[in-house]
Image 1 (cartoon, rainbow, N blue to C red):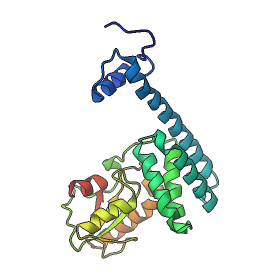
Image 2: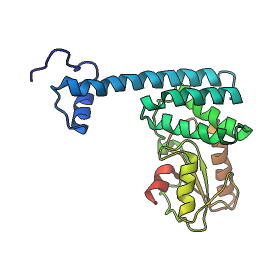
Image 3: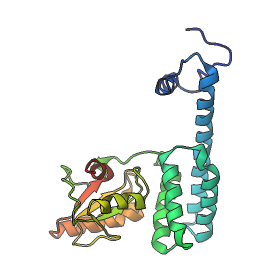
Image 4: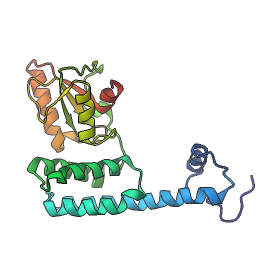
Length: 231
């Protein structure tokens, strides 16, 4: 195969280039069309690297404060157009929800801290999805019934932000709860997570659900995938 001068092969792995060209129905020997796509990929990589650095700086002192959340929101507004990464888009939505009332409460700060810590942690690759074997999910996954059932959502979701996912449940007759109790029917864990869930803020909800289950309460612990597949 002949390759014209300036061809981008070598800038990225060849299998990645071929896949992108196939997805966009482009000829591999047409750099005028495919170079912009891969230039965008490189920009996205830089944006993601910068977000990881910002997240690391924010969580260094162990807390997230109002000024940091507002500053991160400004950065996301300035950079959101450069990336289609679902984590960045979800983080943008999460922070907008948090600042909807112009105040970051304690629970919101803790959950955002856990999310940012995952971005910047050495054991987490941006976009890594949870491994079901590392979480105490019900196995086999139970059938999800929405009508008049209570749901608590925890963790970071790939489908959409927490509010969007809650709306999907409520539209189907489900009832959203902020916390875990013995009367809860389903605890839903977001797709993006780490293996060290016990050390995260959402890990406390999982531990509480497990305690209620051990006491005989019929709480189902399911993944985001199980929820979405039941829609």
